[in-house]
Length: 338
Ligand SMILES: [Fe+2]
Ligand SMILES: [Fe+2]
Image 1 (cartoon, rainbow, N blue to C red):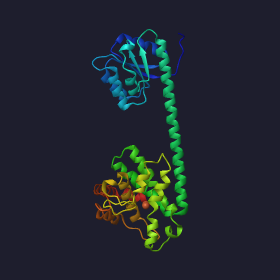
Image 2 (cartoon, rainbow, N blue to C red):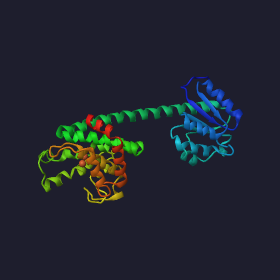
Image 3 (cartoon, rainbow, N blue to C red):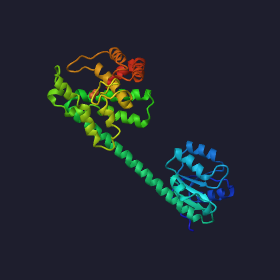
Image 4 (cartoon, rainbow, N blue to C red):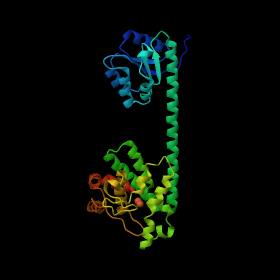
């Protein structure tokens, strides 16, 4: 077979047959690939955890750990690596079901037909390139979504400047609180989006009520209380934001069940909504509004303490009070510049 240079891949080979492995290594290097060989699976797996590889070539029949077990362990932390399983004879290979379950993309029967293996590696490189393209598209899409979110915030701001500013501050407070709570990156990002848009439902409230600077009648107040429902309706049309709208929908619920719109209590309330509620109320208390003066941080914290266990989750309230009390100056600076 004529040697043809193909794109360079980072390949790791695990095989207890040293001669075979060395032969493979020499051939693959000739094709421009970077090749790393291991006879011992445990150290190979440690290496793969520490460094990213494109392709794994693993022998099936090894002792004491068989190739499919190695793949199972690798798949726990790397779903992307392209895997080629080798065996001396196809009768000794695992079943197709096992290969499918473990997401093993190729099977190579050990022989001198290395051209077949080279073709498999080319397929692996194409697979990785496609995967990278999809990832880039996801990044672009995310970027567009953030852009679109900025437009939506401005739409809200055009009608109600207080809500726009308040939402920005609540999102910042949530991000600081989320870091203290060690939220996963998915929860962190869901909370950020929910905080940014938690009051977007106010867009559906008549101006005469929303911008009313005086005291609201009961009927007007009940209309304002519809804003989580309106917001959740807006977000429910989007599949991408399907995890966001329950957080927004529940941001006025209370632990004692006296909140709205559902009056759910305790652990019925989504965890991220409970975090959002605390940051939301804290900002509402310290902010100046047309109908009220701003209050001090100390007063806001005393209100959160007073209402912990009834309005707010006790553990989260304590954690938030500790966070703000220990970083009062930074929080004050950030709120002034927000
Ligand atoms: Fe709200
Ligand atoms: Fe709010």
